[in-house]
Structures are given as structure tokens and as C-alpha cells.
Image (tube, rainbow, N blue to C red; front, top):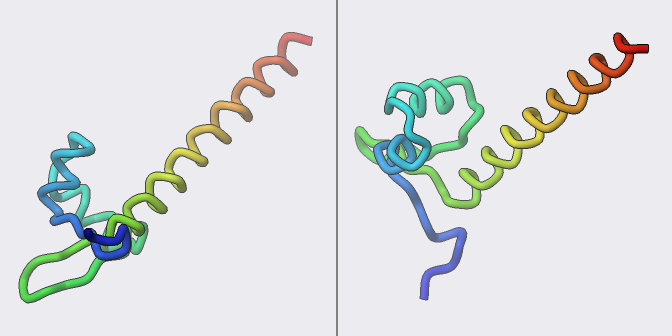
Length: 77
């Protein structure tokens, strides 16, 4: 049985999973938003790192929604 830290995705897998272009995944890797290992000419992303990336993205989105709602409330006063 594979451990979570032993599971890896290819860039194509993540692009399909997130419904984005593969270049978007490469940009995340280049910008160091998504940690990856380069094996030969291909990148591999650990499932653990992908989960961390999703948590960061989700958190930013929630914070943005909260701050925009607070701004709307304060402008209504």
C-alpha cells in the first residue's frame, strides 16, 4: 500500500484535475507556488505538496471573500 508522501502527479494530471492549461502548472512551478521534482525532462509533484498548494489557494480565496464582504458592510453604514 502506497503512503500519501509516496504518491506523485505528472503536470498533465494536475492540469486535467484543475481544468487548466498545462502551462499554468508550469508557471506555478516556476513561481515556486507549487513544489515539484524534475525527473529527466518531466516534473513530478508530490500529493502532499499539491494538497498544500490547494490549501494556500483556498485560504486566499476565503480571506478575499471575507474582506470584500466587510468592505460592503462598512460602505452600507
